Amino acid sequence: MSSKQRARLKSPAEIEKMAASGAVLAEVFRELGMIVGPGVTTAEIDALAERLIAEAGCIPSFKGYNGFPATCCISVNEEVVHGIPGPRALRDGDIVGVDCGLIRDGWHSDSAETFAVGRVSEEAERLLRTTRECLELAIAQTRPGKRISDLGAAVEDHAHAGGFSVVETLVGHGIGRRLHEEPQVPNFRSRALPDPVLEAGLVLAIEPMINAGAKQVVTAADGWTIATADRRLSAHFEHTVAVTADGPRVLTLR
Image (cartoon, rainbow, N blue to C red; front, side, top):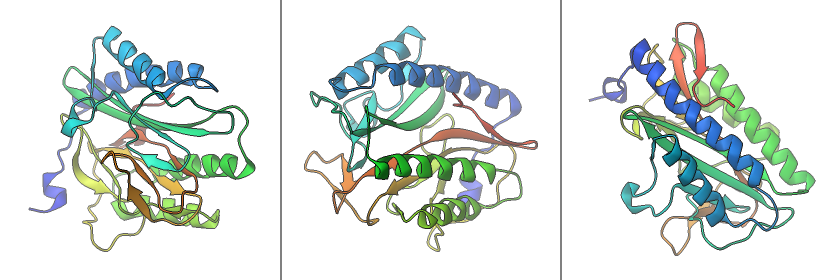
């Protein structure tokens, strides 16, 4: 069965339910952005996210998923994704990626943002700006008739133009009743993955992961945290986006 055949299209009513899930997640990120700063631990950020999700009557998507122990993946500096929150206190000049998802009425939403902690280096600022722009360019391609490869090409070209590299061992994904659905959404031109045509009703989690140095990554001893092999900075931004006849609809917009 092809990737396209496995991708489940959502009805307009189902997209509205996913938008309601995404609206809660957007508010969680607004609140998290207000506490990120020097001295705050990654565990404190995670605890706030878990409390806000519970108060909204929702369920964290990540906690317990394949055994992941926290509500958010929180990744600092050279860590790309899947960092486990803990006692590490953020320092002025760090960048911290927060990836979080939740379930509302059975529908997932998923988003990520890399925050600057205090005053960061020029390279860090440029990396954050470029990665955010990569996401925006990919979203602009999320229209009926486009292919998944159009999203990846937009990300790859912009990242390389900025002198950065694209992580190729991790990709975005479809999303809906399940956190990870088909199709896979690479942030580069892939010859190995299926390249379906986008149709109205498809909902994607688009999530460029861009490295300041080389694209190679390694897995830490905790079995979860993915970091750059050369220990240089990495940034990650993500939105849940619905393909509609009128163009892309960002369900986690904030």
